[in-house]
Amino acid sequence: MILASPERINAVRAAAAALTPVVLDLTARIAAVAAPTNDEGDRSRFVEQLFAAEGLVPQRDSIGDVVATIPGRLPAAAGTKTLLIAAHLDTVFVKKTPLEITKTPDRLTGPGIGDNSVAVATIVKLAQVLSMSGEASAVDVLVTGNVGEEGLGNLRGIRQVLSDRPEVGAVVALEGHNLGRVTHVAVGSCRYRIVATGPGGHSWGDFGKPNAIHALAKLISELDAIPLPRVPKTTLNVGTIEGGVSVNSIAPTASCLLDLRSTDEPALQRLSERVVRLAGHNSRIDGVSFRLETIGERPAGVVAADSPIVRIAARTLDVLGVDPSFDASSTDANVPIAMGIPAICIGLTSGGNVHRTDEYIEVAPVANGIAQLALLTLALSELLAARAI
Ligand SMILES: [Zn+2]
Image (cartoon, rainbow, N blue to C red; front, side, top):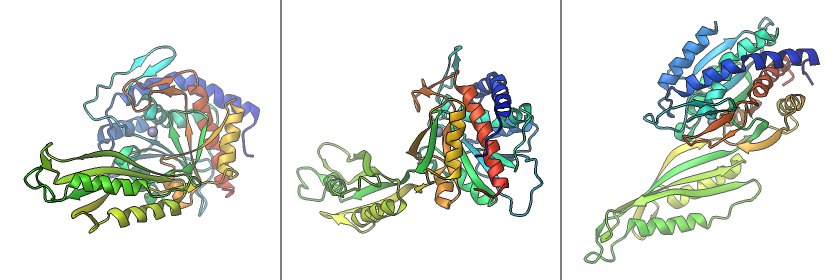
């Protein structure tokens, strides 16, 4: 295992602890800039300035991803791969949400504080953590504040960053919450809007004409009857339903949002094909026609539990006295994992009330979270330089 000596680990821990107040201050400033998914421009420009203030040379792409390079100490040989550290910029909060951040010695509280402002602040300061520790990564490390991770962002930011940079050889997605997580199983999803359309009419005078709500209800019960494997875990959920015009009208339209998930890409595709057969274009129930719109697709995949990236992430946590927990989730790591690039998602601290306006993070674990990222960066960059990943 390529992990630094105890002396070097202590130097990284000391630098992480010394810079923690700066990271927390930056976290509050980043969280104060609105960044709803698909409208991240303000925060993206702010983070571009923060990278520049660190002496890095950020690049901002057309959708708002900001990428900076922390130069490695080895001259780039032909075919050398780089490491990408990704922290998403976007939040689930609409633009008018009041972004009040409160601080106590133990906690920072505010919308998006841990998901994902503290992670963005940490990647901004990563270069300084390394230099203060007297360390440099072996190969170049790319750090990105990327757009489009939450909800209907559909992971478009990380997709763009990776498609622009074929030299990336490993990816660490960074999230503020759940220090200790090593997410190496990517939960894939397909999300659809199903729209049912019929003729409408008066509930009494036109009784007998097709009703879009009745037909959609029958369709949903057919979807609900699809058998789903427990292993690999595969799920189907109708999350919202709406439609109709009044109590005494035959509903002319109705629609629902459907979320399909699996840890296994073929299982997800099989389920998706079945849904398309039942609810796709030209399908009808009782004279009501259905239309299916894709509103999100996230690929599934697995990085083996005994692969170098997972083992080093676990070892790094061990060294810092944190118990690793291996899990499956939907994160920016889904995209590289599905592309066959070794990738994981890790957390920085503990906290709670994620996706609520009273979200909070605990201050105490942050220094360990920062040290974890720095040590993992050094170890993975050694593996990439040795072409051992
Ligand atoms: Zn997040």
